[in-house]
Amino acid sequence: MLPVTEKAPRVSLGAFFCALILLLSTFALPVAADCVLGAADELVALERVIDGDTLRLRDGRRVRLIGVNTPELGRRNRKAQPLAEEAKEFTRRFLAGGDLELVYDRDRRDNHGRVLAHVYNQRGDSLESALLAAGLAFHVVKAPNLALAECLANREQEARRARRGVWANGVWPVLRASAVRPGDGGFVRLSGRVERVDRNRFLWLELDGPVAVRLDPGWDYGHTDRRDWQGRKIEVKGWLVDRGAKYLSRHPQNKRWFIAVDSKFTIEISRN
Image 1: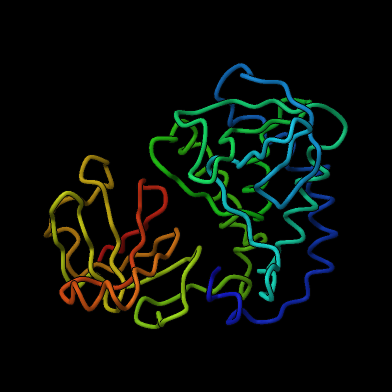
Image 2: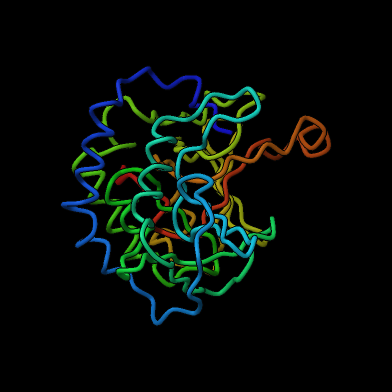
């Protein structure tokens, strides 16, 4: 769970939520139809919406959307992240009224046993695209499920330019790498400056704080040469993993926290 949850300023979301419902009926549906991978692999019935990016089907399976991460609902004495309830309600309304289409990418299951799929409503509109266009999700990429990455990244950019949802001022602050502390983890937007670049099996960008960004040298990020990365300010979206104090004591030369980045669409590089 993200440390930003506690740091995010309090914002009034009632009027914004009403605007989102209007957005669903007047804007998101036409835009959402373009991120289409192919014919449906399965036609399924929805039991309920667990949160903005996770569904339970009537056959008992759980489905995790590919390519998006919505704010987390409050659980286990943790507060809900900004717009978590709005994302859940948006998904419920978007999928109401008929069966769903599931389209698979490369992986069929995640590490938690959930079905991984691109989800479309009975009209053939993309739920992932609609959530991103409404500013109720972040575009995320986990290799090898990259088939719709560019299209979904474009939907996120539209919301970001319009400052919708999570991109509105003050709703979802960027966490600085130098400010990461024990207890931090989960999904973040994180910024920092590259102080050192290491290469082994992966390309590691060590930031000005206790965080490293892990890149796969096989992917095209646009700046794979060591000289290109050094000194650059970057911003990434992803899951901040705390390897713990014991790991750091055994490997003092490494950073305690890291974020894995699988795509150029989830990392931004400054030009200076």
